[in-house]
Length: 298
Image (tube, rainbow, N blue to C red; front, side, top):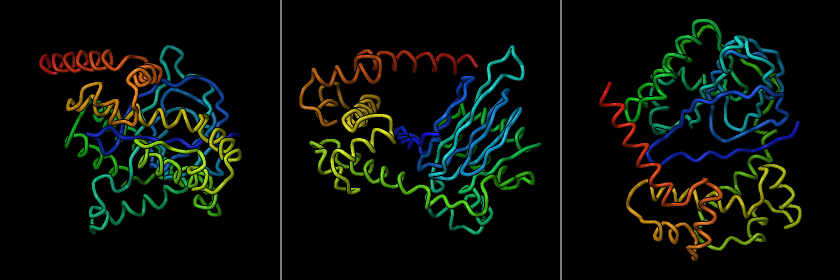
């Protein structure tokens, strides 16, 4: 299998993300890894699970907690109910998403133990899945403190579960096997801190360190994109955040994101987001109004 390091950036108003995905029935051949923790609920499919050095067939709903840097992949073979599309609810978060102080409280003792087990992957079954599913479905529609409270409720359910099973072997060391991911993370950190400036290939390669040619091969292999493309994604992601905050106009967002040419900014924005900056804002405003009307009718 190939190995791919992913990076997730959280929206400015969220300390963790939750989303619902339709699952494509195919045999994925890429092990993915990311610094964030992950909770994944998979429904209505059969296939094979790869987590760390663990490989196993699965069928039906399953709920998994993954620690940071833990390589993982699912291969989806077929839907159990052919009339229903297989789907997943996925949450990405950091253990201290509500502050490190929370994890230092005596009430968090069992939660810390759970996070330690997550380094090797934890599979839940039985009633834990049904209880967690109800909370995760609510999280898709909640915002603010309500959603954060549901996240704590979900973690409490996982902590109290009597069906938890550790997946990777006792000999599997995530830290050792994640050395390449940690190198990429150093590069990501440098780019996030300097994306508004001119980023030189030689400077970035020196972080690891590697020759520029070796770094280009390494970065493309591990992220499936060039350094230039990744910098563009970071800049456009920052610009989109500025636009959604409503404080900056398009021109200001352009220059605040490391661009000095509005034409290039518009071109890159449309290529990455699928819409021009102005159309992107119009779509966001339309979605916001639609959500407001839906809430009023409930």
